[in-house]
Amino acid sequence: MSTAPAGEPSSALLARTVPIADPGDLLDLLPRPDAAGTMSWVRRGDGLVGWGVAARVDTGGATRMIDADAWWRETAASMVVRDDVRLPGTGPVAFGSFSFSRDSAAGGTLVVPQVVVGRREGRSWLTVVGPAGLGPTPALPQSRGDVAAVTPPGDVEFSDGALTSAEWQRAVAEVIGTIRTGAVEKVVMARDVVARTSRDVDVRHLLRNLAAEYPTCWTFAVDALVGATPELLVRRDQGLVACRVLAGTIQRTGDDAADLRHAAELARSSKDLGEHELAVESVADALGPYCSSFNVPESPFVLHLPNVMHLASDVTGVIDRSTSEGPSSLALAAALHPTAAVGGTPTSAAVEVLAAAERMDRGRYAAPVGWMGADGDGEWGIALRSGEVTGPRTVRIFAGCGIVAASDPAAEARESEAKLRPMRSALTS
Image (tube, rainbow, N blue to C red; front, top):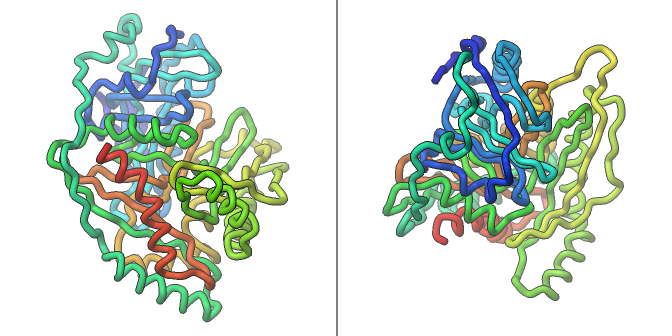
């Protein structure tokens, strides 16, 4: 195992990728419950899982993502790569997560797993990373090593985080007052809840439950952060860029006919459409300097999830390569974060408001989480519907709501409860 500090590439490593037969459910391959050494990026059964640490960098401050990106460029360039598959996600990859705030002690992390198993377009592969000079790539069973049985967390008790529900509603009311003065248009207010379990938390148990319940979301685990996000911050794939923007939410009732009516109401809601437009504009403005062209849909669609429905827009673009290879996927994520969907509008002013009103450090909630390859291509989501494993039997879970002048604190509290449901259910199922 090699660990490198910020700005210093790791010692020479060999990354060997070979094709394998379909291994089945990727999440079932994760061999151990270790939250720090378990990595996942899976959607609809495809994606990547990894375990072990071949190299790692920890960064902090305003340049945490850019510093991590520079480290990865140097580390990847120094690797010996033998890739027999050559698909996005093959060869060496780094999984990462970063703090929402530049001032947060949570900072950022990129981890290069010792073992990665991936599947895409009906093809599967195994990547093993280790010191250059190692022998042949081991088969998947040997790469898994000793496999521990997945265990549930036992009894779970939930308690208030930084604020009680009543305190959070009062904070939301104060923010609405600030918005009505014209100082800001929108503020995304988050809250946290603490889960305490009677047995040690096995992150694999959470991942399996999240993937089963939310297959259209990206089920992720990086450095003890775990969740299932419906929001793709940015994907870079061979010069093409894509972002999925979510803003505007309504709870599901469990009654199909009622939910269809609610979806139609959401699609016509001036409050939610206005909130969504602000979020899309923030993404388009951030992408503009890096793209030679991009497409913004004229109107959003309604994304149906088991717990809520969102207004969603898929923004796409083409990287401007007139002068260079263009920014990496992580550099694009750094340019986009925070979007209006997780911060507010105007974003810098809204982030100042929420930092005071939430009375907590978000840590890595609502910030970039994902992976990238040696060529800079990759996928980064926004760490929503997520929790941080803060101790052997403690998980801090989060939810956030977009607050505008027309918001109602009680309704926002109900929405936050709906958004907490995925992690609550993953822990208790």
